[in-house]
Length: 460
Ligand code: ADP
Ligand code: MG
Figure (cartoon, rainbow, N blue to C red):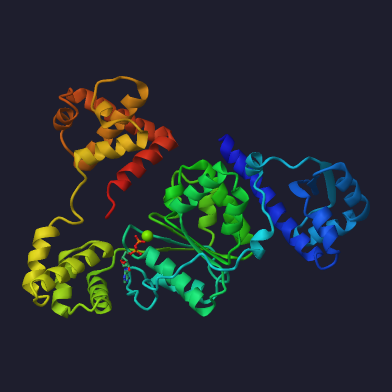
């Protein structure tokens, strides 16, 4: 709870910092450059409470000089950016070292002057023109088009969600591609949440947090893919929270993707979840058979594969799965056809579907997969989970594995007991009940178990 409180606290700071940046930006037109550089830039906004904005000055000289000459000007500029500022209090506080600055989120103005070359390198593969629109993705598509047409105007943020392989990344990249095509100076950044997290940690370790922030915050359009990856990573979430607020308060366009809706990002901080929901939230569902067929025909045309409507329809019907798998099937069929120097016939398609795609979308995860996921999640070797140790963390992981196995396979207690090394069926039932009870009263346990189950079904 302490962390939530801290985050809470900082929202205020972000608002103040953003307003401060804007105010100084405006004063640049009114005051000499040296004054800005020597006296105003070194000031650090700290807090805003009861109408008093507190700014830290790095030394007494600057504090007194500003107090004497510029306090009134600053007050006017700041109160035009943010409501309710009645007074400014200047404190003396030497600048902190980089590691500790991280705690108080320094937002520098530099982002606006960084190299405007966009981070986004378009491959051109994912465009709006080669995205097939159907009932399953209509809203997401419309939202993406609107955002690409006028970034930062209509839906901000745009939040797309849906299972893996249904076209979320395609739509995001299409937005980036379209904006970039119209104006190649527009700074567009596409980043996966995993990259964001890794680069953030790297920046922290190497005292390069300012550069990291400059890069993330100096953009016009910020696209963050697979945001669910950050759930549960508190420090990274906090950084994301600040990045989000910073960009949003300046009217920059934000687009996010996730495998589930904001409300189901259980390990995500509530404040982030509500921000994600504040614009347009659109789902991307499994396309129906006709749309799947149209997607196959589009892909075939793109890759110069001769595919008849009948064969496309057969594959679309036979593989009721996500588009990525469907594409894989098309590639396989085309490769086989070219190996045999023949056409893509219905027979060929049928034999490949029978050989490789019989159970796609219907198979349950195996017991080994369950143990493996649970082990990875709790960082406990599988052998320990199947072992007899009664140490609390190991027993807990074992009970979770029992719970998930029962939920997913529906196997008898006896059978599950056998899987766990010939255990008595009552101890299996006991483990199951324990987790069910825990899930009712402990949000964290509830979230972890649900995430684990969910992640065991990547294709659903
Ligand atoms: P996600 O990000 O949702 O996991 P992707 O955007 O990576 O999925 O899509 C997987 C593949 O399926 C990509 O090659 C993409 O081009 C393709 N795809 C998904 N939906 C469509 C669609 N409606 N039209 C054309 N291609 C699609
Ligand atoms: Mg994706």
